[in-house]
Picture 1 (tube, helix red, strand yellow):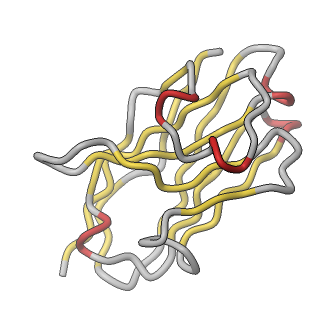
Picture 2 (cartoon, rainbow, N blue to C red):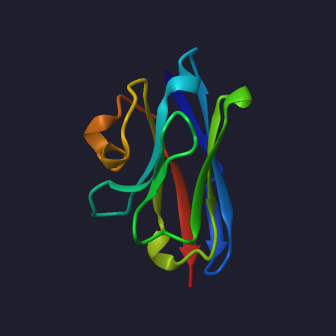
Length: 126
């Protein structure tokens, strides 16, 4: 699976962005997908994850209620809708995938994902 993230940019606090992650490969429909982010000087952290079914999602507490992960299997694409953005959301955002069927408790773990995109930069100004 190859992943290509896009949609990052500069936005003012309170604004919205939608990130996209296009996946290649025949296993996308059975892949668990995740979004992570890494701010300067910090470790990469979990943002959101979704099981292959699309019915089970998990979010970091810091983004719960503001961000939403979704997928379009017909387009082999996973999205991250980000609303009410804050300066502390500034980071490089990475999408990740695994063909293994993750359970809810695994969705937040970096080690659970086998494939990573190149990252897209989101900058939120105050």
